[in-house]
Image (cartoon, rainbow, N blue to C red):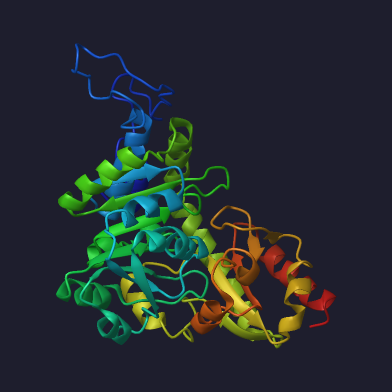
Length: 381
């Protein structure tokens, strides 16, 4: 089954009881059992719910996993995955990851004994050079958030396997429509389903899948034990959003490329980060491991002091956190999504105070470019 078809018919796409082509919302907390200790298949909705299970089967199908898991947020899913490790274990962490992921490690797991080292995973030599005796995992994003760095997944996972590391990939920016990390050697894939998978800025969710049965068993235990599961209504919304993922991602990419090219040619822009530009250092690797470049664009103004004024001059690009919805968004990572990362670490990774991140939506590209042009004119750039 090809991916565009799988988005609609993958996982559990119909109700086996009624034939409904939209899996029903099973809004229940518990289930009648046939006898004492003999449930029909579900016993309590934290442990399992038919609507959530349909979504979990779908994400596993799309990413090539053996099981999927749906959580109340992307960070809840990442929390469960990081809970696989023990006090004293060490993790290699991409230096350019979502600020919430860094905060979770630095302020929650580190005090419980989990250690980490931040590295630029786009340079594979950094992986080999920073493996310690107690290193257990490699955690990365590609494209990364917010600098859109590209990591060679086959090369990184080969190094990880040689050192007995579990490779965890946050695939939020690319989505399974443009990239399948498990097929490139990764062990676990995590998503903020809130973003492109949901696609309409109306649901918060996290999705996890793995192609390793032993890891699936452990993640399933942690999902139930920790309990931050996705509710049935939100599970249904996620399935509805995923059905249109293909058509949305193609349009996101088309608009993003036009925006990136416009910014690259503008004299007031110092640097543009978009892996679909042939000037991007990871362009060739991205071409090999991705089927598209998604809809995220970051850039820096030459006049950094005008960044705030420029951002606040936009109309169609809504100033707000998050990404991946049908509407275009703009934010300044240093004071918004990545503010939890200390300034010295942000700057060491290349996240400057004047960096702007755009989530390019599905509006007409002519209107988006006009909005950007107007903002440049308004601040005198």
